[in-house]
Amino acid sequence: MTLAELIRNRGPIKKIGVLGMGYVGIPAAVLFADSSAFDFVYGFQRDSSSSGYKIAMLNRGESPLKGEEPGLEDLLKKVVAAKKFACTSDFTKITEMDAVTLSIQTPFLNKEDLLPDFSALLEGITQVGRYLSSGMLVVLESTITPGTTNTVAKELLEKESGLTAGVDFALAHAPERVMTGRLLRNIREHDRIVGGIDPVSTIRAAELYSPVLTLGKVIPMSSTAAEVTKTTENTFRDLQIAAINELALYCEAMGINVYDVRNGIDSLKGEGITRALLWPGAGVGGHCLTKDTYHLERGVQILGKNLLDYPVNEPSLYVLARRINDFMPTHMFHLTLDALNRAGRSPRGAKVAILGWAFLANSDDTRNTPAEPYRDDLIQAGATVNVHDPYVNEYSGIPIMQNLEVAVKGVDAIVIFTGHHQYKNLDPEHIRILSGKTHPVIIDGRNIIDPDLFIRHGFVYKGIGRGDKNSHIISK
Ligand code: SAJ
Image (cartoon, rainbow, N blue to C red; front, side, top):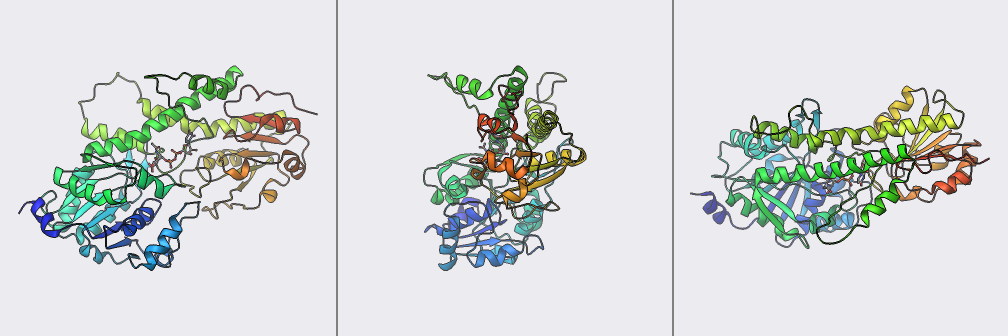
């Protein structure tokens, strides 16, 4: 019997399992459960010491995600009350599912050697393989090195189940495209890349995602093309950010305002002129842009081995972009040293308040936050550092303050690392009094404050890309 016949006999997808209750898995599971096309959704979560708490929370209809996620909590309460969604650590229930998706983190172990840490993903795939039944669909939503679905994942599923992909079960890659703060909207409204290892798998996976799409549509392709699409869209975003970050560094050196230049460039409109100018800043964090370039690089090394025609001894443009973006926290440190010096202070013994620990504005997501290497540099230089963030409750080994006044009390410098809306209306006079300094330092890593306002109140100001202000005269 062919896979198409097996799937026809099994009938439409009714029961879905989602492995990995995080920023990707939770909204996906809730939207599947809320769709009238499906009967029931299990969220599968390991009952581990670090994340086992999520199981009880989710079954109470409470979201473990702390940042602002419009609509998620209400929808979760609705599907739990309707008994269409439950979270469990009993992976044997996978056998009952028609389709299983995996949304598990795929960080990099070593970026230099392009070595990813697939341990959590492989453990998840092993669990699915153990309880796989014929005619089932398996979908990888995690961002992975191109070629992974049709090799590593396929082989492990076949080894664990004794079944054959493309014959006994369907297998596809349908990468997530969500951003914290708009998880539900992104899943509903973004087009969905769906890449099967064969056309039958692609069609079955399209059947899974179509019911939850409102504005978005399914874009079918092969699993490898889907993997390259996902890793490349993040690599290109990182490249665009690196381009404007480099311009910001140039503008500082030339004494001009990068935002004037950006507005100028952006004004050239008209047919065929596309310009995706992004925003310079204190650094690029998160779980995606900081690693997907390396997945793409690894993919071409594996799939394009000895076939790639590229300028000899020239670095990858994409990896260079990563290095420029990874440099921005160091640049923030250099700006801080220079400003402290202008205020007659050295970093040794200085007190600094970092405003914003999350990598993204108005979120609680601290993965690969660019503020951490900056804090490390400050401490290395002998400074003491307070960290404030309205959304982040805790972070391993670093106390996070929720009270802004306490965080800036008695400090020599205030350094904005995340563009949370709470920081947009900082009152310079109030902050200056709390600091107890005549010329406190303020470093704006996200261009959210008005430099002139703070300069008028005696601050020593520095901003990313603000060559027009960074050597301002210090007001008496
Ligand atoms: N950043 C800048 N300048 C910008 C935009 C972002 O410095 O103009 C910084 C942010 O401050 C942050 C980092 O880059 O530290 C990443 O920000 P992001 O807005 O890219 O947020 P992510 O990483 O959560 O979302 C990206 C998105 N990818 C694309 O738009 C191509 C999202 O659509 C993906 O779903 C997500 O990666 C992912 O999960 O892959």
